[in-house]
Length: 79
Image 1 (spheres, rainbow, N blue to C red):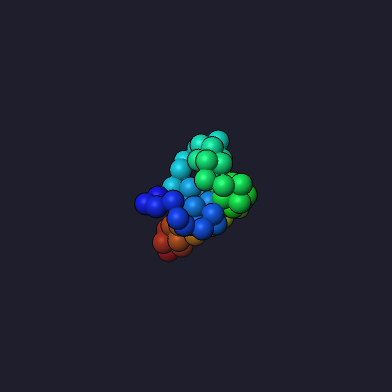
Image 2: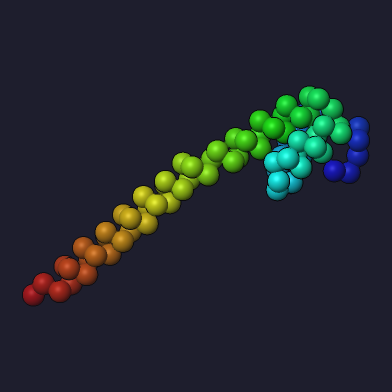
């Protein structure tokens, strides 16, 4: 983060998106301000929780794709 004169919300968002480890995000944002901690924690946890629905969506997509390919193969085999 280039300068320390940014708004706490900007730093919180930046730290949540740029830093991988959640505890490191909290520690970095805590060095900036308490408001940055709130933003950083909220954004980081929201990103982490998005893994659940994205995983289900990808699994559903691959299941449908496999099913479609299987049906297409069966159609090709019929005389």
